Image (cartoon, rainbow over all chains, first blue to last red):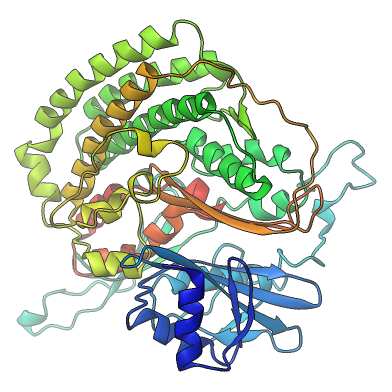
Length: 157
Length: 381
């Protein structure tokens, strides 16, 4: 199976959904995500496995990356959604793939991206009472830089 | 175990007396959680009606650290993910970086890496089997047997790179050092020895009546559920899905080696144990073929210490002892990765635990947790 085949199949069903085609990934509209994901899971494409969910902070926008795998067609699809900084929310895919539960919680935990209709929208690795989003590029806590009072000691950065 | 009794009445609803749920906090410090895991169990009598895992006690923010370091500097950090299989983590990371750089390595590098990675897989599975038996109450003996065999492998790694747990051996474009001169005989002796011992483990554990009673039909994971939860590795294969990246989407030179992919029938705790035990045998086959056909050449890496990756992204997954380890690397053309996401197998494997132990006894919850074989280091990262 080729990426172009997947793109074509999605285009036939959702002509407007794909905004950009990249060499190894497709970018789709945020509003179309749930419908496209539903279509990818059922039907001939049979993406029955959500392998990985993560985010990337591009400073002016936020990206959510989904890696879907189809055991039947032996094909891994990289699906991307871009979010504007004003509205960091996207539909949760927990209803389709159970693995989305923890993976989306992790993405929320580190980037502050809200997943709508998530059954358990809590932080997962960081403390619940935290208000920071550690993997955002503007996150720079004092323990991540060289402190003037502890010359020579360096934290994670 | 830290018990928090909310209110303990007669748990038997048939007697017409009121009963209430009991919350048991299993962990964060508990011998059978293999790290710092906290399970919040809701019990009706002895039966688990709900389970909420709380994780993050071992969180070290590896992904943020990766963004602040060059590609080479992050290799030692991968050791600390799944600390029982450091070589495999190293391998997954360097392969991902090599894919990002579009770097080809010679055959000898791939062979040496295969031998080392498979030996570490055996070592990791041995720990997993020994501790699983210990969780079930087979106190000390199987664990000591397994650690004795693992010691042979660890001693070889010690000579190879000076480490016994965190190796930092793989390099981008090669490995840190060549195999020692006596490695050929040493590994061949070990293969012969371990094959004998595998039979012993079968007699000691696999077909032991008490062991069977504790593990058979406990925590059955159906294949469609496993795929939906993105469970990978031996746990997926125990459910009857014949899927191994080494076989189905071969990376390095795994397509040159002949080996089988053991699968289970039912997906219960016993199958998960048996698949791991069988995988040791298959790994021995791969090591035997690789050490027999080791091509001449130089395996030590020769690459600049500082380099820039082209602006691109890559996702590569490798078969770790516990499942599929994925690295999602995004580069903006700089010295450091723009984003390094680690998709760890235990993270997804643990997410299925509440589903598996629903309706089981508390003692069986320990059995299921031991059989899915998690390492908290890579869950919390």
